[in-house]
Length: 199
Length: 52
Image (tube, rainbow over all chains, first blue to last red; front, side):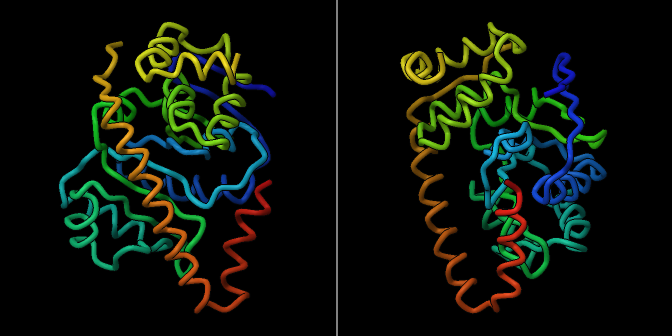
């Protein structure tokens, strides 16, 4: 695999699959609207070549006021729709501000979808602030820093999560900020699981 | 780069909440699928399954 990795940026060229196209279509709307976000889900490992399916793509989006969200909603609604609510005010007040996610799929479809949520804690806010830029076939998207993504997947602890963590670690070990990576391993309390499953 | 404050109890709560949301989503999806014609729902499935 050829990857160009520099500080907070990864460049990758590959044959795009249908999920990649879905992701690029949606994230281009976020980029055009100057929305800060980071993809945090299993899609990160699929992006970098892991062979598995995913029904949803998890997204942490910086908290914006309703006006900005509403403008984004209008742009998104040309091709996508929210499966939770048909009304932007309801989606914002009842879901996002209450710490719940909303999901956007292509019109008339249910899957795949984007799970869109505001940061719930310091870790989420850190993720959107220190996100990693990926240039996928020169298209820009943002993901959670791998130094956090891998330890957090270990923390989640499901079989699929551990497999994703192990896959990403195999690809990126020696190419990450080791101090940051080890810091998150320690702070998330996953040292033993890291030794057991990834080393 | 400064590390964020990490509250492990809060994250454990998040993990449970996330799982609950996943189950809810599965229920909603199954309900949607039951009332949607095969041609339509299988288009969404194709996007996912043909990915790998």
